[in-house]
Length: 82
Image 1 (cartoon, rainbow, N blue to C red):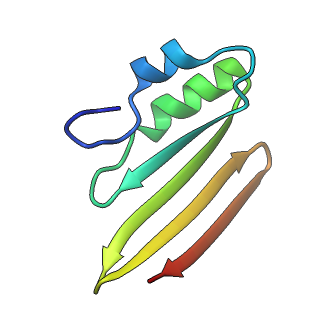
Image 2: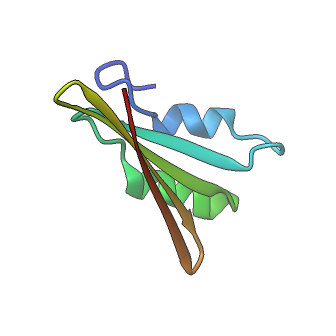
Image 3: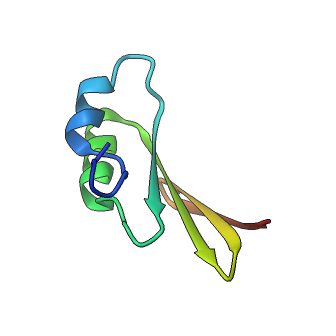
């Protein structure tokens, strides 16, 4: 985890990937995006799925969006919470 942004850190991810790893979940937290390009390269090299989540606050409502990067397909889901 990047201590300034609280987002996923590429070096930390590389250390933690093992034979049981199936996907990497990165969260764009408020105004701090994680480095999608680097994470996608790691996923491509390791044959893993990249899941992107976006969480932001708008007028005291939390929105969470999920994007799953799959070959030839892209799945997007957004939900509004209290």
